[in-house]
Length: 251
Image (tube, rainbow, N blue to C red; front, side, top):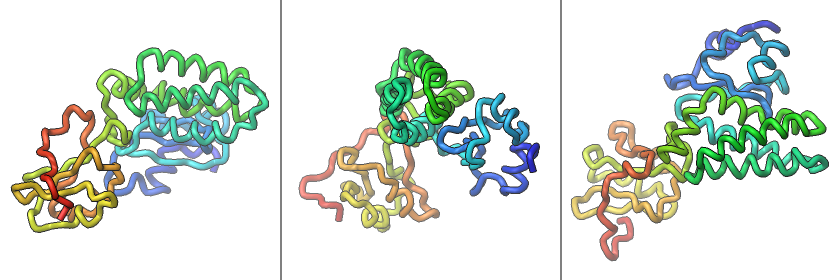
């Protein structure tokens, strides 16, 4: 019913976040909806309350984001959709969303600067005020709300070249922890689509960072009793690794 609190819907009716993950945000109203943090979960589900919080009723859909979701990538993902949906009639929506997407992509790929945040906020406000239809007027919502509630994640990407959620591919690397790796297990080797995993001189598995496409297949394939594959961000924290021996084809 209208007026139900977001917290009741998510935690009681929806059963909460799966797999014991920590709740991070709820994105409400479709691709143009805003992202609200835990502190906003007592907001009632109605048109005015959601609008005041920076979200909207929109399509009525909700996406629950957990600790493994990057809010910068989330904003980029949804803006990529709305930018493609622009009919191109008005300049603010056609060009403004294009440049907002470019700025978000730069941040996600480690090229962001403090100036990017200023430009993002200015563009978002201009696109919202200057667009002719509701698609353009609401397209900045994911950007504005993530900047408002999760600015620390933007700053981590820019200042420390790290993705706290380890979701942004350009700022993340996969690594096999030697102490956890089972020497006789080849699950990760068989799962890698580009043969980036090889066996070193100590008979331990190593990921060739040059070849790795960061598809997550090795982490999925690694048996839970070993849990040897981890994601690392920033890339500067990646431990030194010996090169692939000449002639080593992953066997």
